[in-house]
Image 1: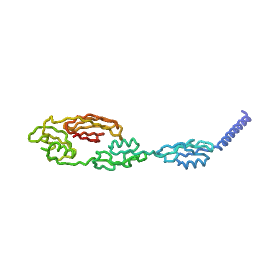
Image 2 (image 1 turned 90 degrees about the vertical axis):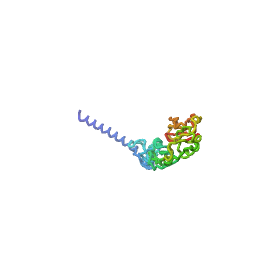
Image 3 (image 1 turned 45 degrees about the vertical axis):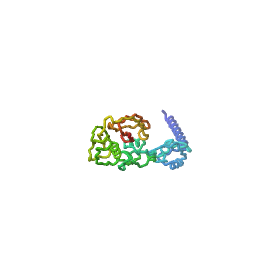
Image 4 (image 1 turned 60 degrees about the horizontal axis):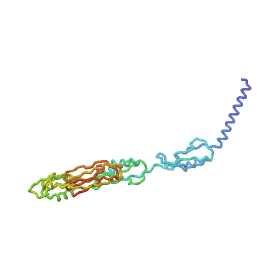
Amino acid sequence: MNEKLKKVIVFGCLVLLTGYLTMTFVIRGKQVMVPNIKGLMLLNARQVCGSKGLYLEERAKVFDENLPEGSVTAQEPLPGEYVKKGRRIFVTVSSGLKMINVPDLKDQNMRQARILLSQSGLKLGELAARVYSGDAPAGSVLAQNPPPNLAVKRGAGVDVLVSLGERELYYVMPNLAGVPLPTVRKALYAAKLLTVKISYSQDPAFGKDCVISQNPLPGEEIKKGAVVSLIVNGKTEANRFRQAVLKFVVPRGGLLEKRVRVSVLDNDGLTDIYNEIMRSGSTLERSLKLNGEAVVRIYINNELNREEKYD
């Protein structure tokens, strides 16, 4: 290749390069680089865009646990891109942490309380205290902080006050020999000492339907809720059976499904007649065959919910 041709090629390349640089300069001279405004508060982001001749427009709001409320979480176009002056920069703005309404934990046991809080995006906080309560079974929630329906941040803790149940009371077992059965029943029910089994035997030394013997024995110390067995003067056929109908609606609230247990305490002793999982709001209806005076107790998740007496 001769020297003249080389000069022509070099000159041509210089002309092309100069033209490309000139066009790029002209085009870029009318454009600006998009600034990075992610993480800036909306007012500051608007000022930064305005200084570049750009306009900021809010497109949407989203909950964001990492950026404070009112700050930019995303932008379009992205930082570093070249756009014409006057272009709109669309942004998504943070609404901060999502707020959660605190569920009502009162009367729930600790397991149910943890499940309800977990389902709501919250957690169990401190166990504030355990106190005796005659109105709530042991292990159930008496009070909470924050209170129900208050809006709190996701992941917040809820402190609870938990029942220890009723304080145990002790009695000295009286001598029931010779006392009529109706009188004994009233006294035992008043002290919440339920008779678990009544059997009959004939003894001319005692009046009709009077107690012959008992267990626990007279003078023994017993606690509230203890079981008492009695032998009563009378014929076995004196035991009277009767029919009753139990109708119970499973309470709503808490878990969708709950274990329902029904126990009967009559002259035949203590028997569970039902123990199944039921849905909240459903109805349990059963016929009962009771021997003498009876107490029917209904438990929800092994906690006493209702007690009915059949005199």
